[in-house]
Amino acid sequence: MTAFEGTVRLVGERLVLRPFCLDDAAVLIEVIRAREDFLPPNFPTALEAEPIAWFLREGVHRIQHFGLGVHLAVTERYTGDLVGTIGLFKVDWTHLTSEVGYGMRPSARGRGYATEALGLVSEWALHDRGLHRVELRAMVTNRASIRVAEKAGYLREGVARGAERDSGGISRDMIVFSRIATDPPPRGVPRPHPGGASARLVAGDEEGRYQ
Image 1: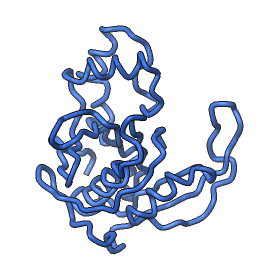
Image 2: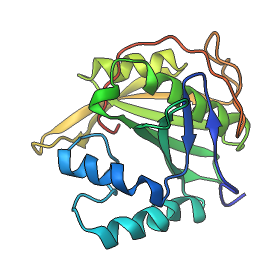
Image 3: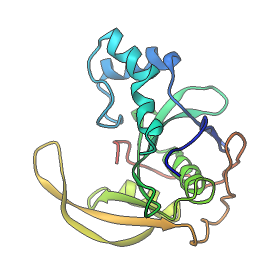
Image 4: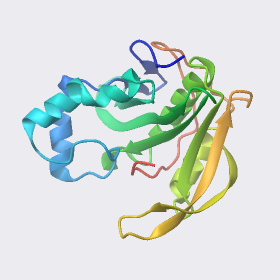
């Protein structure tokens, strides 16, 4: 296996995870203008129409095309509103491993959306896409993201010292979490499948910046 094939669409109790598209241009412009801090590092940061259009049409999908990961829009199931992003990256098909990152918009935080999205993506990656291990890292001071990881069934493995530099240029310790395919799913979370899964997860606070 070398790529995530086809269109990814994961449906949960309150969320739909889907590919980004040109229809997301207006909300992306709104996010950039408001300087919201939840987008992955490779997303556009400048209000330039042509680069934003190219990114939504092609750029955001390249990681999936080359089998290195996937970026998904996290949207409310019944309104279609964009509430965040989630993605797999650093996929290694030889060892069947990946990392996961997510971010929620400021207006969507504290509703358990990150936990639900993380549960959906993790179950899909481990049971539908054939990965064996998904790793998640959270800053040791980020209690909200730590709770999200634990609620989504991730097990704490240890601390990676000085593994990430913060916005002030200081190297911070990161807690390493993981789920593997043989782990039991969190209580109350059924296995998702593209297009129609339902996930029932305990709501809670979450840190919104991309992890």
